[in-house]
Length: 490
Figure 1 (cartoon, rainbow, N blue to C red):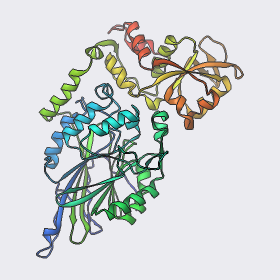
Figure 2: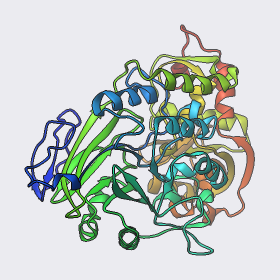
Figure 3: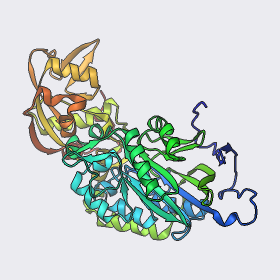
Figure 4: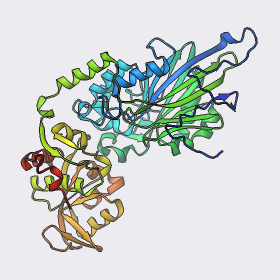
């Protein structure tokens, strides 16, 4: 069967009735014609799934945030905390806007507790504030955090703050939940944060966890994978072998409802913009799935749950008020991979640390800066991960190798027709050594940028990568007449 992801507004609902695909329009699965006495073995369950929430708890012009999401669950699925519902996350829960990043995810965990989440896979960005912080978030969460393929290098065991799998009983049905985390984690967070862990292959880990959860009594098994859809599709043969019919993906922020034989694959997108509703009917007498109905639904920017709005506001009120004060005016959105973003970051860094003449960063660690008022909160949201700037010593040849191989955003160096020139006008000397300023996530990321191979003795400057940006924007004293973008032209 050819894989064809469904577009979000098609809202095509897929079902499986003893292996045959049947389209359904209702939220609750249809009960098939059964002989008398069989219906008491049927168990219904509705799964509400989100992934890559990234701390977007506040309402925006585009979506309703956490309070809107809870309201949508109630209106679109009849959600109640004590009903036959299973609320799940695919990971990357808290690195993002200032209201979450300021508290290193504690505020987002409180919001997810209030929403009734019952389990979450661990994503790469859930390590962004370090292992000790992740342990604190796991202890604060009213739900288990899952990853079967993260193991301690020292012991070979699953870390004690995580679970390979759990079994939860919903409406008389024992549901096994298995978590997987992307093997890209050492490259997609600061590698120092996960240095004590191994990230094992998916298939062998899934097979081991799937066999164990069945032995422990799970009837229905759901895979929560902080993996892109392509990697999840590669696991469908193992899932089919183990009798895992529902695979929930994440990491790549895709919007997917897809069926491949008896497997249903879903992913909700990101940032609380959408959620997936999966209505399930299971026959405990025959120990088989009867019906699956999956649909992707919006979280529009509408009024939401009042109590949850109050919780979000209470965290907002706890933030230092200075964080929300306007420090600049921006007349156009600046995306992470643009020359304007490169100039905003590297100009401020090099001014704060003049010993370096060149600076670069990876856009994948940077978010866009929206149009309008700029505050310290805006900068915190734009640079949500913790990084310290490192002064490295690289030759011109080494620098060019990194630029051509990894394509970072660069400041202090320009390229015209293949020739590289320093800001002062001198050509880049391939034999000469230069002080190059970079975030420590890149310096520690040996498997990706190999910078430690060139300079194992980089100097940690003590400069948080956000503080020079804040100082530089304040110094510009921008206004409606002279906006920030006017200082960022190439």
